[in-house]
Length: 329
Image 1: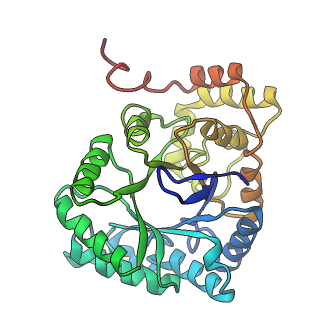
Image 2: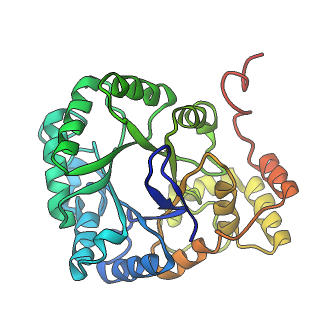
């Protein structure tokens, strides 16, 4: 396993992280335990979850909330040595109950959500506490005051963001700096060959500010995993994604043909493309099975030649570079 610093911090994380969104929904507990065992054995040290993972992410269907964290907590409880071998990351923001203050980033909710996550995870601290989304109705002074208090109490170590725009990241950092805080250690963004919007402003922002970049959905909800074959299970079998497959069929055919020429599995190529980008700290793999995890780990040693990278840009063009040059003289 390769490791790198999480942004400008001294913390080192594995280039491939374990995402656990499927735990409790598409992956049962026993399989989740086997996946975590295999991840730890392979050298993965960054385990990513969220308080809402484990079922439908809706306050009206809350029976699945927290299950992913609970599965991780029970796995950690099996062996006390495991906790110190991983960088444990979870998130706050999503509605956890139907009450008006059981969501978003008020100091009230951040404290309650952190305490609840610690209980489910069966640990006394969270290594990376991530804001799952931006909350523009809550002032940054309030958010950082709440995070600073949790850091003082030893309940969290680093703070991260997720799904932030470039200007949200910059605003967060400016306020953190005024309070003499480290601020954001990482940003977790949607990024893959089919979704390249963050190249406009998020990647330039995290690079300039020394913030780590964690990427989720590296295979585009299965689109980049050899999706033109028969699909019978998982999220790829949903009607909405079937419609996306048909809309993107010409690109998918060209992509899978290129992967065939390279003699590589499409999922491996998709992950390798992300790993070649120096702005990417770690790619979050969200396997449903141990075999999927092992397939994703196979991307680590794959170095794509320049001509293949150029062809991938032709098949899956990005926004044209960084803003404003991407759209202005």
